Image (cartoon, rainbow, N blue to C red; front, side, top):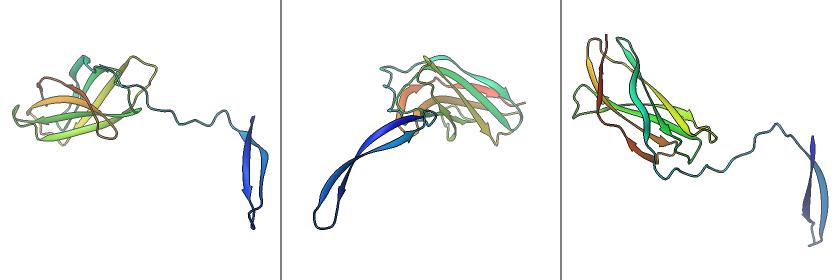
Length: 145
């Protein structure tokens, strides 16, 4: 364990003031709160989006972007529907960015699908606070078995 020395200021009743140095134990295994990584100047999809898996009632869409930076907590978002001009359903899954990797892989599971149906979709990503990463795919499609 490392020792951390902290100056503590005490104010006593009657306005008496004194200062003391206190030794405290620090734990090197306790995670510290990191400031957000710098946001990427331009986020772009580098691979996909593509269908990873489709079953009669669910599907998984995956894609890769350059690392968007910002907060470590992000969401992959899929807007989808059975009409390419009306993508009125949304699925999203959280990911935790690794600030030391140059890319981020998003996987989103869409549930409640109908069998033997063609679905159209676009993907995007955002920070946990809702701030858009500024990237959106073209409309893609897949069919459930």
